[in-house]
Image 1 (cartoon, rainbow, N blue to C red):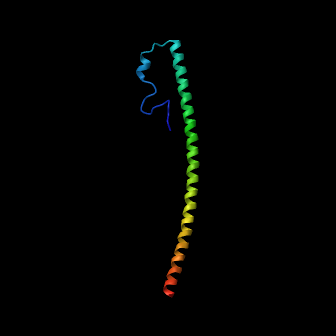
Image 2 (image 1 turned 30 degrees about the vertical axis):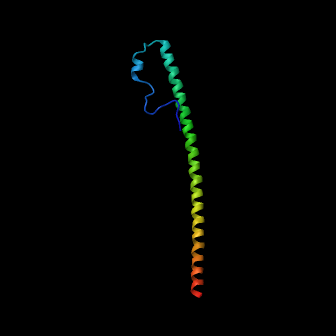
Length: 95
C-alpha cells in the first residue's frame, strides 16, 4: 500500500520549524489548520487501513476454506489411488 502523505522515516514536523515562527494569531491559526488537515489525513489513512485489514481477513478465510477443500479432495484421491494399486497388485498375482 502506498501512502502519498506520510513517510514512516520522516517526522511530520521538525521541532525547529516551530521555534523560528513568531507566535501571532495568524500563525497559530495556520498551524491549527495544518494540524487539522494532518489529523484528517491520519483519520482517512486509518479508515483505509481498517478496510484493507477487513478485506485481507476475508481473503484469508476464503483461502483457508479453499485449502481445506483441496486437502479433502487430495485425501479422497489418495484413497482411490491406493485402492487401484491394491487391485492392480491383485491382478498381477492372479496371472
